[in-house]
Length: 170
Figure (cartoon, rainbow, N blue to C red):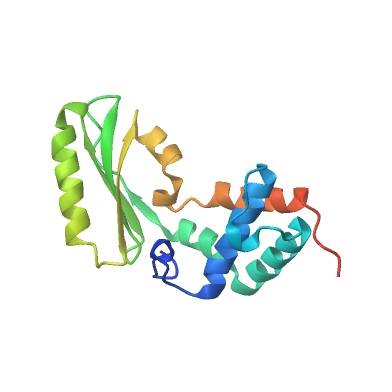
């Protein structure tokens, strides 16, 4: 959203894509899971060292943090039931996230609205939509922090993993 590109579809600056590959590898190493194919066999300390250098060069953590502090959350109406569906709409151009709640009984309406909105906005890089289930708005915010531009858990997880894997010495 910050770079106005869809990394999920393979678009975007190669440096940022590599930053996320390195970050993914670091979290995989920390969790003792397989590392992305492009980085398999590399020394974890080298991965951390390259990640930290690239993060400093790109200022990725600062960009993520700045975007979160600039974002305005526009509350939707309270859901009628404690176990509701929410259509979340992140508008990065306007720096706003809003939501529309639906009761479980309105599931088909929520799904139809979501599908229609996705189709209508598929070429709009400024909008990101998701249909999520949550007990209440507070739970929704914890379950979908990226829609509220809260990258703090992501950033802290990466920093912690980097500290746990000593940086390579040159």
